[in-house]
Image (tube, rainbow, N blue to C red; front, side, top):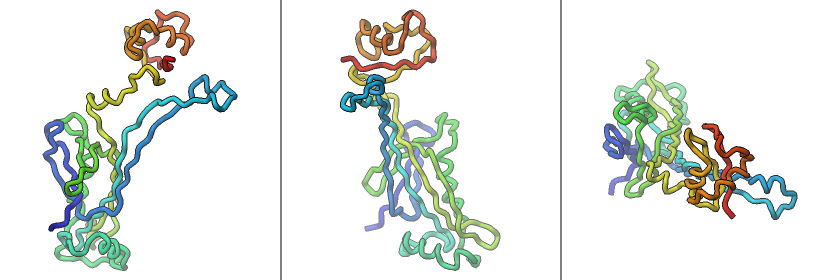
Length: 243
């Protein structure tokens, strides 16, 4: 049974068509998943001196992130599966990394690192950078965009050609419009914020966030609005939960 490699599939010309593919030269020894949730102490709790009356309101569920460090070594030419990542790392710490001798079969490591960096570039066909899917063997790992990448080159040939590199890659979860709608905080008993758009009224805002246009007074009181007919576009309103 051959060793399964971590694989990155990405969009090329069509959205949600992951026709581009690349494999890691050496599998990573660590994968990092991170989830963040933003909470805010509501105004009533901030004014209260009684600890048990303090209440946190959910503000935002931030996109998940997935981080991985990829290792590349082309000093010996095409990677040797028998050496593995630990062997390559040991080689990177040897004196050879400081004073390498040019090898006739060595190739530039840039041919492997550049395609990954290109995943952060704007695509004229997609009108954005491509979305990526990461998997390892039969196990799906993550779907998102490459939001942060760092490159470190640690071994060079006599002519300056880089032949060893590590890349720190962070992918941020990508959601379609339908995914985002499913994750919206539309429940009337959840505090949230709303940015006023041209033509908005408190009545139609209440209808959107509460499903009840008659609850507009709750929004007016929470935001100190004296004249409900005057709403400035761009203003961010606090939407308190309905009791």
